[in-house]
Image (cartoon, chains in turn yellow, orange):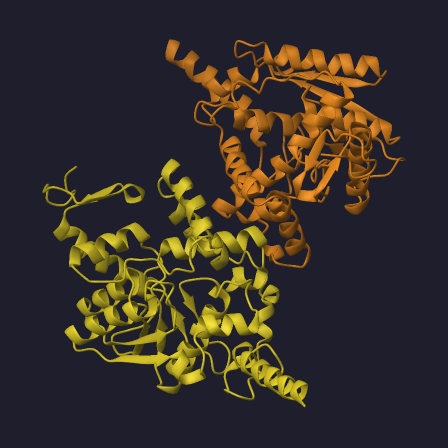
Length: 319
Length: 319
């Protein structure tokens, strides 16, 4: 297999694009694609103050690398979730994020959940009984809360995440199987800050396959945490990725076409705007001041009220 | 495994309903479910004049049997498509439909495509180059045309088809992968006669799994054509059924939930009515008088105009 641009030996063949590239052309091609995505969906400009959620994995660190190469100035945010799972998952991820930031002389905000809220994400999960013994639901809630808070309080114009096409297609697939209107309607490359207190969220890697991001990190020599989160095993999103990988193997381009045709259909008015139930998310949490659909406390802050109530009732029991 | 109703030996276990039944209770359960579907979606009443498209397969013949047991009066329509495929597919299907109609003293309309239009469906496909060398597209177009014409000309109140849940879920899955709005919006248990000249179409088996329909035909001793259409192999709909079967095997009820949650979301206003491009289907074909989105001839009649043009140009070539 030869590079379509220069005839040198290809390192990757992207069947969905009918495009094989050598190392050098592939490492140019990825940032070009990301730049096109940023422009196509009007994500941000070089004048914007950008915050990237950095997990220490291949997608977020590669995205940071790509944005620097493209001339954007981007700060990072690492959230210490306190996940160990026998592989020191959080500690090691943190290290990869720190090393990258230090090497490139970048600002990395660090928020440690245990230090700030007294419990790690797995501890919060056990105490609150949220999410069927898996911390994924509490983890998502916590990350959304902390990311939004920092992006808003520090005046960032956009909050970037490293979701790649496989992530986006798997989320879309799950939302399609259950047909939850408000999730379907709001999924996309850009989530506008259309509620007071909500940061603008963008996903510059939404058109790049996971396999390509892994190749990019490897070929650029970016050190990243290679183990999966220990709680990811058996998750629905991985299951949906497997189904989509089967579709993709049989029909190259199936994942991309699924995601893009959804975006086109939505842009062309397939969905009724009134079906977005989350449009009613107009309350402000009385504790943290962030937007919420609940009338008093947001879902994140409710986890801690539950703790206090639990404590109160334990104390009463002791009397 | 025991019957949940009487404790006798079960012949079928429906994991999605957590329901195992003996032969006798299963053969009662299926018509009960069909009756509930007919009522839930207001398909028709016992006063209606009903036409059922009968292919000679398990679904349509079982549906005929079920409707008779439920006290509906239903005429049949068999369409001779002229498919041989080395297994005399059409001739044998016709025989199964005839035998059932005769045994139950039922009216079976027969429309033979070759006799009426001069060519079989495979011959039409080859001449018109429609559908990438597979007759499935021409076959669907032809059946829709002939069914609608007969249902309208004979004043039937509804046109019934034997689509089961697996058929419906596979169609929905395909429409979801490509996000074609007008197809998504119009798929369902009932397609109203909301354009002049269009028959009302209903699918009373839309909530019954294919496996259950096969069991019903077998246990009721209904002879039906057991071979698949020779052109079905490698078709997209079978491929999508395989994917859904994998989902179902891993998560019993996945197929039913996918289809029903779609229907609920649609009923609750997920889709914008303006996204139904076929709402513009208001023309009347100048040849056959049936509704069409094209300004002059419908897609079916265009196949024959093409023939005449082809003939004309051949004659010109000969001069």
